[in-house]
Amino acid sequence: MHLSKRAAIIGLWVMALLLSSVSSESVQAWPAAACPDEKSPAAAPCLPSADGMPLVRPAAWPAAPLSRAFFGMHIHRPHTIWPSLNGSLGAVRIWDTAAQWADVNPAKGVFQWAVLDYHVSRARAHGADVIMTLGRTPRWASARPTEPSAYGPGQAAEPALDQYWQDWVRAVATRYQGKIRYWEIWNEPNDPAFFSGSAEKLVDLSRQAYTILKTSDPQNQVLSPSPYEISYLDYYLSLGGGAVADVIGYHFYLDEAPEALANWYIPRVWAVLEAHGQAAKPLWNTEGGYLRPVIPGPKTLSDDLGAAYLARTYLLNWAGGVSRFYFYAWDNHTTTNIELTAADDVALTTAGVAYRELAGWLLGARLTDLSVDENGVWIVSFDQATGDRAHIVWRTSTTVTFAPPPAWNVQSARMLTGARRSLAGRTQLAVGLSPLLLESTPVNSLFLPLVSGWPH
Image (cartoon, rainbow, N blue to C red; front, top):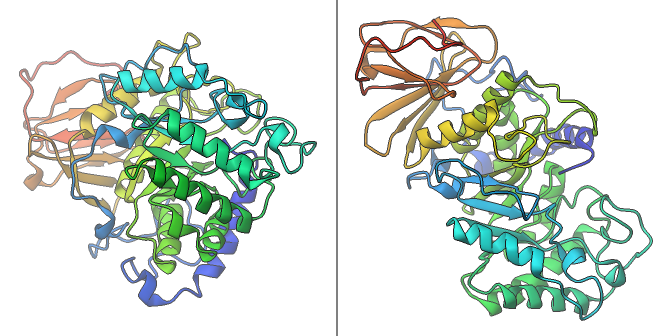
């Protein structure tokens, strides 16, 4: 979780100027000049759809069906019951779990593995893979042991000796050989509360870890450190950091409506990867979502709007070519603006139900198109696991009447609440903030009970 999101916005504005100097050859796969060279309002898509121009490059859309691994999560507490999401959760990231380097290795040569063991065992028992984030230097190993950080003195600094880092990486890689496959070097290194060293030193630490992890197990996959500022990613890659990364990590946190992902954030990250020859590698959103404006403080998103934003965020990560999205967080009730569970960390909230339903819609799907029509209706089209073509539609502001094209042969619609309704014989429906799944498969009865909140 990052502490200074406003700094990220400033970094993005700076990066907009930097990207204007990137050669057209390096970004030619993207729509040309579809938006002005400024951040576009999230509620008013600036990319036209009438001429068929895609919002994201088709080359970024994976050919493989969407797997459980796309639906990633942070689970803070070792005693939290595994999420009840109909088996859709396929990946977890170890961060804010009391199981980082500073927690596991409190003194030189001393390792306390119990909490990390539990997190890894729980994930593996449910068929989910694990990202282990290697950062957070123990105070005893820190280059600046009295320096403040987000987690305690010294934990944002680089190690005082490379040997300390090498010993840690080797120890954790050895213990979890064959159990953890994905290794992230550091969390949000653009923020000095999380990493106060230089980007040059971080590339060096990444190179050391890469060698150790690949020696331990050639199947290990190394993720680049995940910033939330594009300018930092650009600089890190300019130093050669991409050479020691199998996957590029980034944190797509939002303050605004999710459509900014398609209109601004994700395209700019891909442009940086193109510029540095890294666009062939997977891009993972290793931490993202919505944070409360004041921490600690109350939520400012309503339950219904939070559920809509959650679904749209996942859809636009997918459509943007992001291979995985690790939502922050399942059992968090103090910092996230979209809570997935009640205080017991078990009962699903409105957003939690939406997560479960959306995953059910998308597992096994193959993306075919993303567009925005002349009325501002966003449309994600895909082939379902059954082979049937389906479409998910929503708007970013007021509800409008939408007429699905006859070629869609829409027979039914699903809501994020789990409700399903027949649309046989209907030519129009209301489309608003909450995504609707439109399918060509009919329901068993035309006389389904009315559901509160269903758009008429």
